[in-house]
Image 1 (cartoon, rainbow, N blue to C red):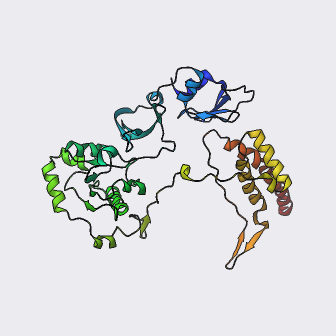
Image 2: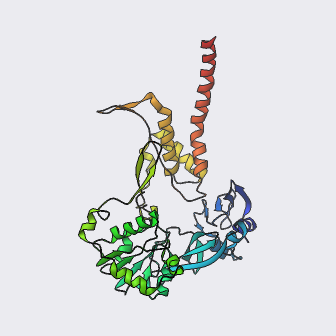
Image 3: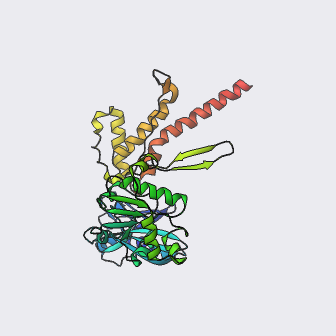
Length: 388
């Protein structure tokens, strides 16, 4: 049973909007107007009436019905074939997340929640692969992916990697490797080498020693092994590789994150990688905006929109401020020391799927759109007169 079939069977007045969003009457309370929103792609849902939310399995438990299997969506909507699962555990051995690999080559992440694996991480704090096994190791090998980690463990070498591939090493991972000797074996391409340098940079001053070992053949340690590489040869490569020194900090360790270069018809451009993304769930939730502090007309308008669309008042207020800014347009400006700046306000509304962002935007922007259409009609007539 797919998520769409599950929701259709248990939600009255179920209706799909667009490709993945759907609405209906909430089965958890007396609901006369559809306040239940769900995503038929990932199974997440939320009721804007009773303010309850969760995933498809949790809803099934609340209703006492059969839950859709975690891989139904993959089997029904994709030709992908699962070949392996990599389970990440925290320092206490508790399952945290799982990476699944498919053919054709692709990866998907799952989180462990209420005794089952749920698609998506949804704010889960990621950890290093094989974390419990490497905590007591004096030397730790770092590679780019889980397959390469398993290859090194096959050699009897304690290895790890970060989830989600190259460029995703977080500062907090380094603390688990404090005072350890680190051997980084990067993939032998530009992305892999940049990733290895980035890991070394974030471990500098934390690890007791860092080596970056370049393989003589193969794109990674697994391919190198398939080409005939052995543990004895790897040990020799590691012994011949000098540890990073203070002098190396003047090359890549003390610099910004690694640069990529690409060429255009005119010149070579150096482009800096994106910095590490800060998860929104780590941010402090701001205090509610008191509507009584707003001009009376605007405050009442926001309050009524919030009640009608069943959304937090901050959502329509944020959109309304942008609409007001657009309405003012070039009619007002601010004189700065260097130039004059017209009034412009840009807002970004980030909420879970099914939170009625589009509906709120449509309702609030309607007067502006109508005003624009009216002005265009008036000016078209004036233009005709002038042309005549």
